[in-house]
Structures are given as C-alpha cells and as structure tokens.
Image 1: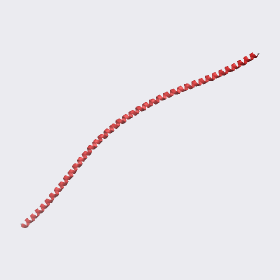
Image 2 (image 1 turned 90 degrees about the vertical axis):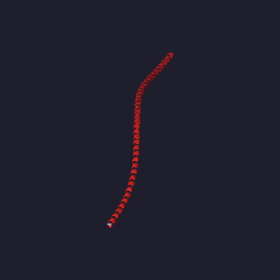
Image 3 (image 1 turned 180 degrees about the vertical axis):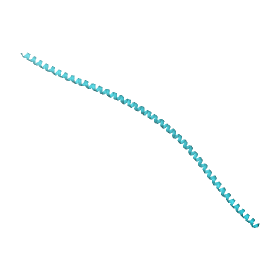
Image 4 (image 1 turned 90 degrees about the horizontal axis):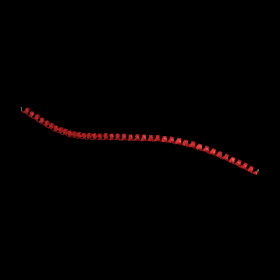
Length: 145
C-alpha cells in the first residue's frame, strides 16, 4: 500500500507538473492569440481606412470624369459653332469672289469696247486728217490756178 501510495503521489506530482506546464503553454498560446487578434484588429482598421480612401478617390475620379465630359461637350459645341461660322464665311467669300469675277469680266468687256472705240476714233481721226490734207492740197491747187 505504501508503494502504491508513493506511486500515486509520484503520478500526482507528475500530473501537476504536466498540468502546470500545460497551463504555462496555454497562457503563452493565449498571449500569442491575443497578440495576433490585436494585429488583426489593426489590419482590419487599416483596411477600413484604405477602403474609405478608395471610395473617396473613386468619388473624386467620378466627379473629375463628369466635369471633363461637360467641358469636352462644351468645347465640341464651341468648335462646331466655329466650324459652322467658318463654313458660312467661306461660302460668303465664294459668293463675293464669284461677284468679283463677274465684275472683272464686265470691266474687261468694257475695256475691250473702249479699246475698239479708241481704234475707231483713231481711224476716224486719221481719215479726217487725210481728208484735211486732201482739202489743203485741193485748196493749194485752186490757189495756184
């Protein structure tokens, strides 16, 4: 019985030692788990902050894109108006150029008519001079007789 008791006490002491070691290991594991849990909580908070910043940046980008679309539409409308005005001006210039061409042709015709009239007047002058010379010769003949 003494041997049994002694063996039982020895097993109890060993069990206490193992139990104490297990308690220490359990405490260490709990500390590590708390540390990991704290780091995870920090990472969760960091993730939430990053997600919030992402949402804010996304909203800013969406606003910038909308603004850019508005400005682009306004610029395109202004360019379309400028193009239409330039086309109208070009058409007006074409009409004016055609009118100038017609006026130039009319002036050429008048110039040709004036030249023809001048040639006719010169011919008449030459004929009148010839006639005058003939008359002068006739007057000179008549005076000699």
